Amino acid sequence: MSQQQEKYTYYIIALCVSAIGFSVYCTLGKSLHWSQIPLGFAVFSWGISIFGGLKYIEVTFRIKFRNFQKLEIRAMEQAMNPGVYQLAKDKIDDSIELYSKKSNFLTAIQEYAFYFGVISFLIWHIFEMALVK
Image 1 (cartoon, rainbow, N blue to C red):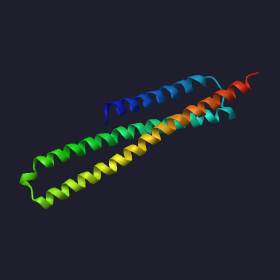
Image 2 (cartoon, rainbow, N blue to C red):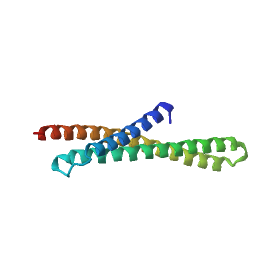
Image 3 (cartoon, rainbow, N blue to C red):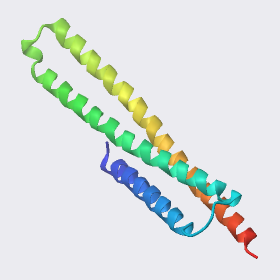
Image 4 (tube, rainbow, N blue to C red):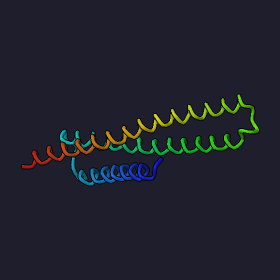
């Protein structure tokens, strides 16, 4: 995982956690009302975004571990049977490819859920402004 992508992932997670806290603060002392439905969607979306970001970090750690295993196997290439070496290398490469696809999917989930939460929050805020008498 590149350092910039890692920072971006942590940044989105922090924004989502802050947004959830702000949403809770905005509704302190208020009774449940239908106009808060978009806020519920926002909080749920930010929760999904946090989950996606944390799973992305987990998957990238797995990719790093697989790359380390690949280096270890490459160092032992001379001592290994060529067939066994190729099989091990192929299994690790397949695993890295699978985790790479999964990390791309999780990044998309994190981003789209974050933006959906922002839009839902804005809709909630418009409802709240419209209901002020």
